Image (cartoon, rainbow, N blue to C red; front, side, top):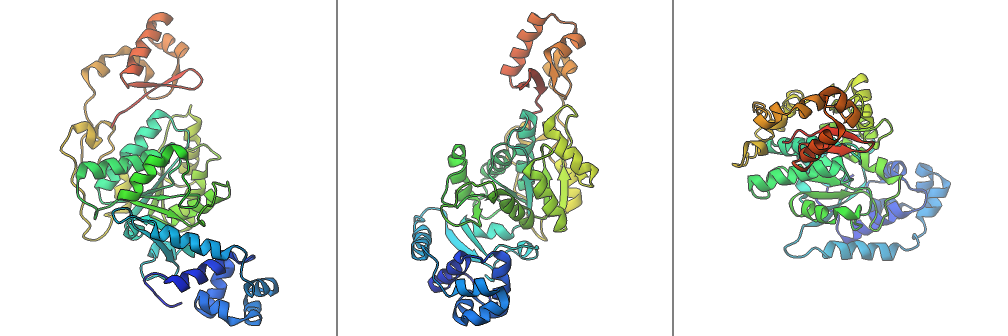
Length: 405
């Protein structure tokens, strides 16, 4: 295929027609492109040559203009032109563009066309995927946020899927680190690979987060404009998270979590897979524990991730840490490299309920047995700790300690 910087209007229309043709999936499209060199050449080749590459049905389908193609082309052009003068840049990237990300190109199933909004150069930046449960524990959410912030400050772009829970927390952590660094728009950022059309707000609760990522990072979708959040779209999205990054970190995941698909795809692509261990009592830790048994690297700090990955790139600088409080550096959770763990506050180290709770979820009855406190006194103290942000109440009447970063 010829190498170009971006498709012009005619080439883009040819790409859209090729991919909209019934029977032409990604594998078939790649075979046709390998045979003829470009979408325009495929469409100009005629039915018989295309039949010899892709079969009778596809050859016949390529001879017909797909229904609704003109509307689709117009919608894409309108979306591209809809970026305001001061808004995030919009672009369609195709396989063969000069700046197509090399890591993604060397996967088993590189996407043929990507819709991008924001800083397209982040696609080729050194990246680490952070994924996990849509229903994390409070500690899991805090861990994802802290890892996202710490990795970005070390020069890594944080890639995730914009889902509820762990994904959103990782994006938020990266955005927070960007804002605190105040280093302009040329450092690492966060990339959200979404499972809908790039013009579809999903989940609705993340509309504001989506706008923030587009403004300072990058939104990516392989799906056509208007594509809804169908279940089949998310494994397709997960392979892009795995393919764009040098490694994937799973923070929390149940045994049937889609995050384990991302981890498997990363391993199959020869990328690193990391997993945070958790409580043996939590369903949301079972997936991470399974990954560790299968050979994923157990990590409990960002420093351990960096030991395996090395520096993000030759000559890549770190973003400066914000000159705020020590807690902002993640020292309290031990998540920052080269930072000593913060000492527990006097109140926390002296609190008998926190000592009895430890770091695993526990029920009121279990805490009563450990502390020897009556139910009414223990409940009142637990409420005080919850309101102060030191513990969280979980489903099933359990309580869990929160380690802040």
